Amino acid sequence: MPIRLLGEKMSGRATQMCAICGVRLATTRDHVPPKAILVRPFPKNLITVPACVECNNGSAPMDSDFRVYLAAGVADNGVSANKLWKESSRATLRNNRKLLAKLSSTIGEAEIRTASGIELGRRTTYHWPAHVFNSVIERIVRGLYFHHYHEILGPRVMCTVGFRLSLPAELIAATSNWHQYNVGDALVYRFGRAVESPLNSLWILQFYGGLWASFETTPLFND
Image (tube, rainbow, N blue to C red; front, side, top):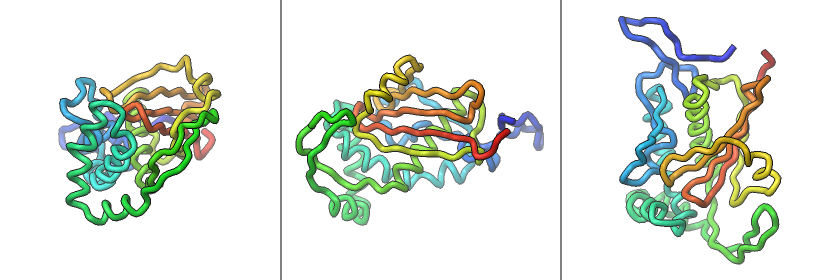
């Protein structure tokens, strides 16, 4: 059965479960995507979901690291992306020498091709730790799933995250008729889920017109 908001009363107040973990009670609201990766002026269509303190406040350091790695890859993709690098990420690196050293030590160059084989030439490359990328993408999609479907994924699903510089032609074709949404310039995303198995869903996200992520959910148990 889908996990929905609880309507029970506790001390005279309605209680809600955290939209991110689906395990603890929500006592705050969390921005989706994290406010740390947005630039001012903030979009008018900000999304927030009920969240527990652990999922909300506990994710701040990871959000900050994610912002730096994201900004390093999209800094040349327009005014907003450039602001993300200059106004937020560089300040983070000045105050976090460990992160600066970690990022700097992996910078290099490589021949880059799109998923369809188009050569983009030599580009600056760097290592984006998987645990930073995966955890933030998972929080974003869990929040978006709740926002659009009013259901909590919780511990019922297995999540598969993919990092992409571009989308394969077959994936573009398969998702071309899906609804597309945006949160300002920061995030454009589309998604779909199986009618007969709603825990099977696929999400495509693009940040600041550059880096892509794919996210797939599959049920851990048969209903």
